[in-house]
Image (cartoon, rainbow, N blue to C red; front, side):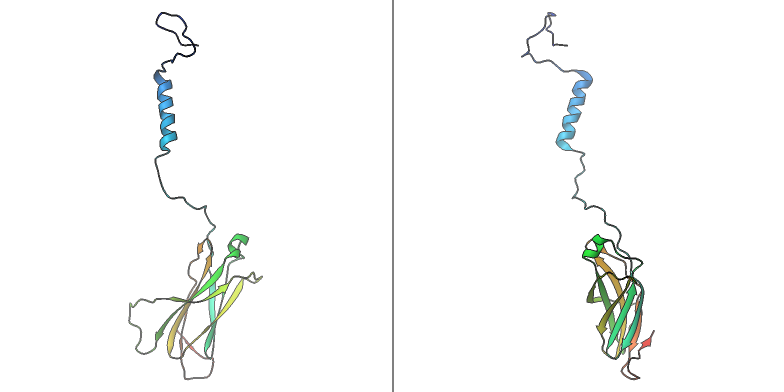
Length: 171
């Protein structure tokens, strides 16, 4: 259907037709969306990463001036998670005298990093030096490129200078 003049005759191809009603409204709405988008501006969000698994079954073995921590993962990591995965070993230590006050904050510091290496048993180990006369708490977290897993259970003991070698008092 061509454009018509008020006299009823067809207009030439150069004539501009007036667009009316719902068609005009639809064009304006489409141009508005093209120009303004959805209206919500936020920083880009990275794709969802699988959750970082929790370290479980943290245990320890004290030898004269060091502790060997061992722990498990519930299963092997995906190849993507395993590429950059490490275990962070965290320690809180306080002198035995004076005793730690009730309600005092326990600030953990990262004392070692153990790289993730596939293991059929999903059991991992790390050794940390100790000093006599301190109360120690340790925990472990799996750290990947996509995030940090939850804290493991913690182990706590007093490392005493008196007594047979390799003996510490668990709390």
